[in-house]
Image (cartoon, each protein chain N blue to C red):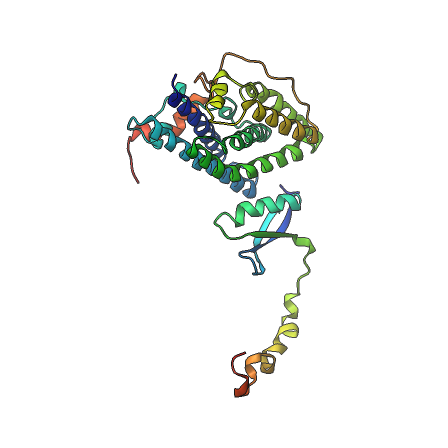
Length: 253
Length: 93
């Protein structure tokens, strides 16, 4: 694999994770527990779709095969998506939505901090712009971890259950792959081990304050977002998200 | 949701201007009210500073006292600076 391929995979991982999270959040339109929370969820979701556009546009430019960002998002098959397994998990109850968002926001925040100093100027610029939004996302989702984790006995129990259910998908978030090591050596990102430690620190400190138990480290299992081996949840999400573009290719409004 | 309280939201659009009342939000406490206000009232570049005040902490004038409180000022033109004629030698103030 040459360096351009590696960069494209990296861009797709950033873009796809943001896009899929955004799509999941926008599924809650009309279903959030209050109007204030609904707007907040949509704002975060749309921030992420905007960021996905930046990453995918750059990926399209590097791919240089005639596809644009829209085609990458709406006409790419499931096994070609590079998003984290965590973010494709369904919204579930509100505890699951909150925990998923928090674990992702913490990863996203530290990842972007590492990319701010990328040797690739475009990557650094996109990361720098996204970081302002994501700093807020992380603060917001941390607040919900504290409120619900350290809330009533019932909310605590639901949050712990959600955390235990989703935790196995954090293996991807806290393992440095060979690919990432190579990307680091090529100057594309800062030390991934440092990012991982920072993620763990953030997660641990919020969980402690939220009175939630930190599960033991997640084990590797055969699925991997970056390799395109997804859970059963991504297919239906994409079917929904891509249905219009597939039924009416190149439709304009 | 029924336990959430009402907060009044004030936004300052620029440095040097006043915070202005823009509406209200529901929240469980002031911190959440700030975040909700940010989501509802500053998403189109409306401001650079937010205040939230618990609605039940605001003491309002009674609408029935309107005549007593406000009508007497209607015929006091001399309370406006424009009522006074400036001598020419003062020039522009």
